Length: 372
Image 1 (cartoon, one colour):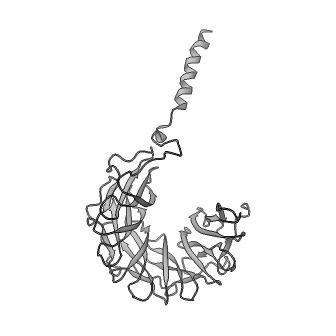
Image 2 (cartoon, rainbow, N blue to C red):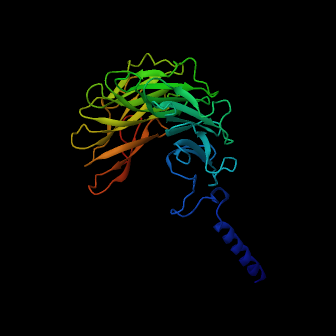
């Protein structure tokens, strides 16, 4: 009886301890109506982008209206759910130059910090492309220029940058570019971990595609060898098609790939808004939404090999991932770790509202038979 009476308080204490939040989750709000405030500064904060810190937390960047113009800030959220106390409350200013900075994108530096790129109107005449390195400590890297390194200040506007790690603490950034004065083209630039632009690459960026008519909204993935594969949608044939190009670590366009890019899909009607993920073998899988049916958008994907050829095991013009009724749009993609990918999108097949669907495409180019 005495043993039993001693066991009851012990059991209760175990129950109470087990009910306490774990240290790793202690600061994260439990209510979906609360969430963790990353920045509550005056004015508006918009268009966040996020990357892992490699330790269970994340670094978030955004465009910020707390000042007289739109600026770029970042904040570090720890795995515990607390904003990193080593970083300034409401975020580290990465760029507070005159006029407007917008559309930030972010990638890990591999050392707990991040590199952020954005389009920048400080010149007062057109948008240029800049980048900044924020250290794990929360300081802007003193080796980089205050308010960011200029990656491209060519004539006319450069817009919609996206970014990928170079695997050595720097990054490759791509954007669409109006320097020709007649149409948008695709360019890229390499910024080193030191904060200098790579001297082996052309000043103001390497041209990846200057084909006739317009090329828009590039997306980028690592090639696993210090270079990158870039995809975009392309009007050279009158309708929007999907193309890709590989740029080597040297800054040269891969000579094994066609000049102005490999056509991944030139099916009838319009293909738009591609996104990309590396395949783990130097190539990439690209997904997009596709109007070839002439009645509604569907979801397709294609595999481009490191050689620059489209994978012959995959259908010409891409594998259909979803051709359900009504419209499917805005796919995003992640590698599956086995040479394939998982794609998700929003889907109007119900005819009453958008829902969220996903599909698994195998390295073979087949949709996974275990999935619907």
